[in-house]
Image 1 (cartoon, rainbow, N blue to C red):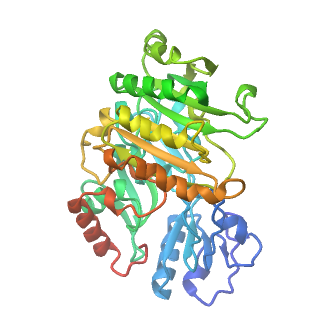
Image 2 (image 1 turned 60 degrees about the vertical axis):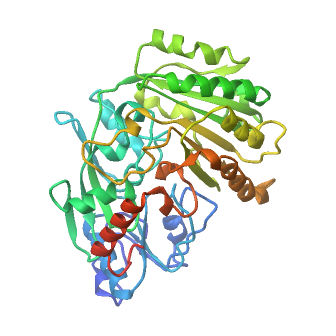
Image 3 (image 1 turned 90 degrees about the vertical axis):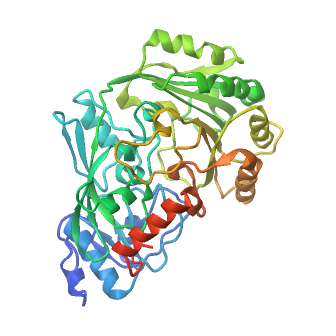
Length: 450
């Protein structure tokens, strides 16, 4: 029942379901578990029905079924954002809607709801262009963009959501709508950054930028040097030009043979760096960080943008994880020390990753067309991630909470995609929160997507 063609059993009493061309699966049926599984293996989804959409018409039919039966509807492409069991919902999986079309003349890409950034990056690269993707091209492009999207090119070009020209959306009444600055402008504002509870985006068109290569990679240091490296980084990063992006991560790595030998089973500090400038400038800019402590591994070099995954080297296989994040107004010495107390070698930290990311630049400026993206007032973001199973798993939730509590004096609203688990309503100003609620009431009065 997993084919993307018309293989759905036609025995459903609901005529809406009988009209769906993609697979329609109930719990216990062959292929159901595979259909609903997400990248975050901490959760086992238990929707009451899973619909593998192969067209926007399938999505519209699924929405109509949810509305007629009074069920909540959820969507999933890759499941990187999975945050619960989805118990009792109608789950629409969109991964078969994976079309990507690049128009080099207008420098745009039109992306299906299930397309991953890898397909977009590769298609754009054929024309010397790049999307504003994130650190992993395995992530779904549409869901990432609707949450704002902070990537390697963000300080130079803004949030991914800032570059959206139009969207194709199925709203809660089951109607398909073209949404842009002239058509349903309130929904256009809300979807670009508001992400959830507004409709099912079946495709979107966004601007690409003329980037073919970057100077990118990272510097790895032993965790014992965390104090010197972090304080060097916090003084160095704010002075970087906008065409440079950087983050610093405290990593506790497994003894995985896929990792470079110097990193296997080791706790390290990883300084990430990307620049669209020259190699000579990059070398000059990086000198203070290279001198902060002995370097365990240096991966910095000129790379094609298609190799952008190598900068962060995020996991590619499904893993169980919990995460939590916040924005920071500033990152001074006391803030750095508060983080170090939670992550350095003597802290007892069990989190697999704690990351600080430099924001600012174009990420801090309003876009040409206003949207609901959060985090423009943050100078940095802080994110912690842990594996809530196995050794130390029972301490992950407590340590994530403690990490955020430690930086409360400097915290502010950060980007939605970097906020992790929990209640996100406080990310928006009171005015924007009220405006989002109004758009949701208008387009989804019954709360089908809420």
